[in-house]
Amino acid sequence: MSMWRDWWGCLVDNRWVSPWSGRSWRRLHSPMLYMWGRALQGQPKHWPEVEGVFQPVVNNHDLLAHRKQLLSDQGSLQRLDLGAGSRRGRRSSLDLQEVKISQLAQHALTPLNDVQGMVRWLRTISSRGRVLELGTSLGVTAAHFAQSGWEVETWEGCPATLDFARKSWRALGCESSVLGRQGDFADLLARSSPDECWDVVFLDGHHSFEATVHLADRLAQHTTTALVVDDIAWSPGMHRAWRSLQQDVRWDLSFSWRGRGFLVKVPGMRRQKWRLA
Image 1 (spheres, rainbow, N blue to C red):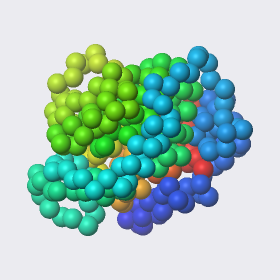
Image 2: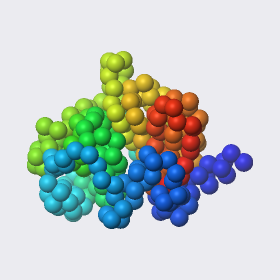
Image 3: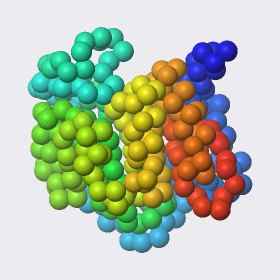
Image 4: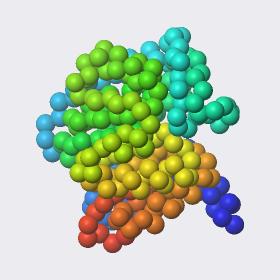
């Protein structure tokens, strides 16, 4: 029964199905959730107004051109994968693999509408803040986050991939807005001060039940507002991890959106769980 529940969760929380299986922002009664739902949906006429002057660090035209260029880049990287790996490959996680940049971009780039929605969501939380991304990849999502006006810190396990991302940030003019650190996520977290906190943390990279639950547990004390778990529909194990994290009393609100799980601290709010369209 549990296995079927995990598979069903993968289906209904998949980014292609969730727009049909989730709840429309129009049917959200909480003012905060209503605003967040409007920010995440794709119709500009419904986007909420946010406070503060928005002066993007990264030129949007340059960023869109960079995304397009990556998809046709025939260069390659010696990639060390400490996290998700590939469903098709069953190599040791410590093996180096030569990967074409275009191939990596095709599989690793967050869809444009999704990342733009998350940037709008960040702006509804605050005009300024600190965001931590676990799983830099080619550095494009970090560059998008830099557009929000927030301070961005991003961690990556593969040295060559992080070097490539840094070159991209330099070319886009956002190098000073993004701090990249290389290493195993658990090791980097262990070296962080107990008082180190980020307003929002995006967790991507370790796509297994045990690693996801363990990292999320340790990240909770370092997260002020929200922890976003990517790829909750990646596998039955990942969706089981998502359902387990929803039971953690440190998170007052949880909702899924396009294959991601959002865990939010809202002191005083009655515990709620949603699936957004």
